[in-house]
Image 1 (cartoon, rainbow over the protein chains, first blue to last red):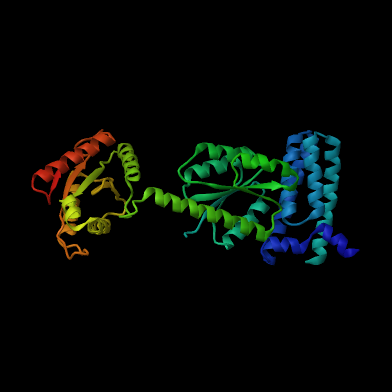
Image 2: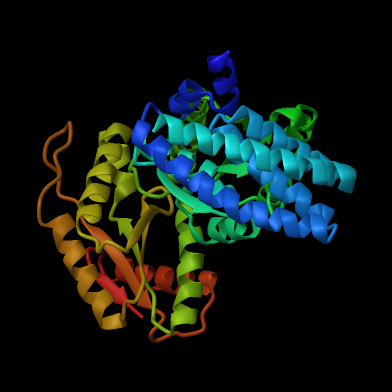
Length: 116
Length: 297
């Protein structure tokens, strides 16, 4: 249902627990994540274009880390796909993961607009 | 215990911000680095860091590789290392431990788990600090022990060469100490030694060090000290020790010391052993002059 879908976007209580219950700090971090994601996504597009699969792996891994820390399951999964694509040297997989990341990021933004 | 200083090596800024915020809240002093190479440099330069949290995958040097490098260096002070690993790398945890990690945390971490694992690290670090104290201090006088004061001497002689400033040493011997022990017993001798050590410690500059060199011989190291200065300091110390009687189980006792004081100002380019020998010679002369006095070089 609604809640199930939303919890795939963000597991808010898990994220809040990780930052010791500090809700305003969590908001700060989410803003930072969004900014960071924007930059990293551009880098990923370039990397996929240039078929630089080491970069794809590195950036995928980094995004996986930050998504995980903010308990954003869908984005974490998509980042993981990107990391694996880089590891497996699979450019097609990387392209798919790029689309998925884009999708999930939009979902996150929509959710945040509705809920803040 | 003083605030523990911790280094974090993590290239993701969201992760490192969370780590820093939490750890600062729990009372740690936190330094953040963004990659393995930067972490390595900071560890070399900052001797106060006692615990490091290393992300496994990082640009420049990987966490596990950095861990190996740190262990190979084998420094004086132990660095407690925690590796941050992703859930899918659990098989690599064995590699991490073999590389010298003390613990690991899987990402994304749980707040209370991180806190608990850090506490364990703190406990181990406190243990190593206690061991260091025991290894370096003379248990009776609480001064540096022989091994430690000689190591300091070596450091200070090197430094005096580098900075082109003289270093002085003072060799102190308690007059008729054997007689005190033979006449009044060793417990009495011990309390005399403790009281003299205490009086000397109260009268040193912040950067001078005193150690117990032998049974009743104390060695003081004074960086950046000329011959005329060490003479003044030695004379002041002699008065401070001898002008008041020492309380013992057998009653107040008059105790005097003989001192050999030398400075590299007049004997530059000298080795550790030669400097000790020079102070020994001066001390010997002081004994021959009738004790309770100072001789310099």
